[in-house]
Amino acid sequence: MPTAILTGQPVPGSSIESELRSLGFDVQLAAGTADTETLLARVPGEERVAVVDARFVGHPHALRLGLTDPRFPLAAVPGAVTAQPAARRTLTRAMARENSARGGTAVDVDSLADRITAALDADGAEVHRPELGSLVAAVPADPQARNEARQAVAAVDDEAVRLKSAVKARDGFVTTHFVSPYSRYIARWCARRGLTPNQVTTASLITALVAAGCAATGTRGGFVAAGVLLIASFVLDCTDGQLARYSLQYSTLGAWLDATFDRAKEYTYYAGLALGAARGGDDVWALALGVMVLQTCRHVVDFSFNEANHDASANTSPTAALSDRLDSVGWTVWLRRMIVLPIGERWAMIAFLTAFTTPRITFYALLIGCAFAATYTTAGRVLRSLTRRASRTDRAAKALADLADSGPLAEAGAKGLGAAARRLPGPAPAIALLGGAVVVATAALTGFGGPWPFVAALVYVLTSALAVARPLKGAFDWLVPPLFRAAEYLTVLFLAVKADVNGALPAAFGLVAAVAYHHYDTVYRIRGDAGAPPQWLVRTVGGHEGRTLVITLLAVLLTATQFKVALTVLAVAVALVVLVESIRFWVAAHQVGAPAVHDEGEPA
Figure 1 (tube, helix red, strand yellow):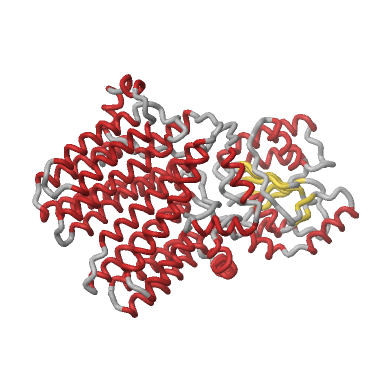
Figure 2: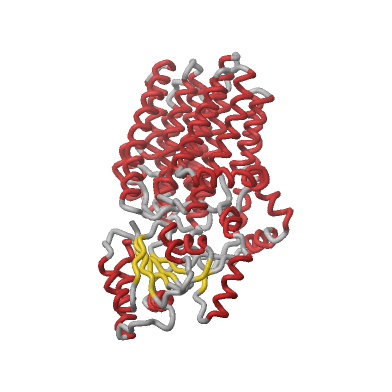
């Protein structure tokens, strides 16, 4: 149980002690600075501890934001400061310095908590100060100031502010106007019944899986039920994040589950639609796989661009300045958020089209919508890169190299061709595009079983090595990972189409889904500052160039039926390896208390 040490002159009628207990703290009273230091030393090192001024006046939610958020090792609001186990030594040092400076005075005239916070700032410690907005948090110096503070507390509805803050500050149009107005109340209902965000996330996944099962029936009733359940799943998907913000129940595992389950739900639903269409005599597996490829590559564009510019300095791009100006005009904000087809708009469209049209029409609409969104966002990023005035750091280059997912063949080639790569006139994306275009075009335009896709894959291995032989610090080098993704995924798609055997495309869908999970997992690790997956995992699953080479070789050596079986075996093998390692990593990270990273921006 966390401990709160209450310091300073007690105030008759104050509710601070009961408020701290309601937040889960064991409250201990300190007579002065020396006593506070003694009590602080007695608190077990693996527990959170807070120092709070007994004269504190403010909203309970202000205290909650300042003292219970698990994402920050050190946090403070006026009159209160807290440290998690990772920052206990830092807090103890600041406390000892204050005790030494004050000589352990029996009664503190000013706020000890605020003095400790100032000492932490002086030490260079990173102290999180939550945005309180209209919430009150103060340590009044006299009765008049106390009355004024209490009046200010009474004038603001603490619960209304808490509900409002449960919603993302930046979200899509559908989510903001059609889901969040009521899903925040579902989040509060869940919080009052002790439900956790992870439980709601799991409920959202189960609902989406049931929706996929309904779509797989191939009946009109099944399609209608699937559309309704998909919307319900999205409402729960919004609710889990709002519950986390409402009750500050952030966790490493929860952040991973939320991000991973979104992809699992959407791609499983695509498979359900394809199965349902097949029951009606319409084979749309190629369309389903095409949508998954397009959506995944679009995400990789976003991830790569953001990582490339994560810590860029001196960025004076006029395109970025224009974008910022457009964001200041109300209607352009919502238009720009809608045309990129974020998850709310996309799922609403899928649900409506599933219920009232056919799977084929649904996939055509998705292909058109996602292609337009990808073109819009990629063009904007290219324009920003054309006019960027920023230096790319080693960290950004490392992140792009990790996102590239180069296997042992590309790594060995990059080492041997480093000198040649430095003499090449073309930038890395042009080399990656050339190799990818060769292998994809050959797979699409030649017959199944011929040697040319394998020969093209050898060229692809060479160009992939050349593309990553130099540090990815160029203005457009963020394009390298998405180009690799498109080349690998589309090669699998076209080879499965050319096999022209029942079951080849579903097997290809499964393989791409397994590999895409590996790529998304890489993104989430990098965003969480956990580094890329271990090298043994990348080498085991072959890297993008190794998998492409193996798949084209199998297409040469095997019959179409045998190729289908091989794709299935590869899909299962890759899924098992990456899932086991991913689950092991994220559970271990959660157990050691790694900081949670939650996306507060526009959803994908």
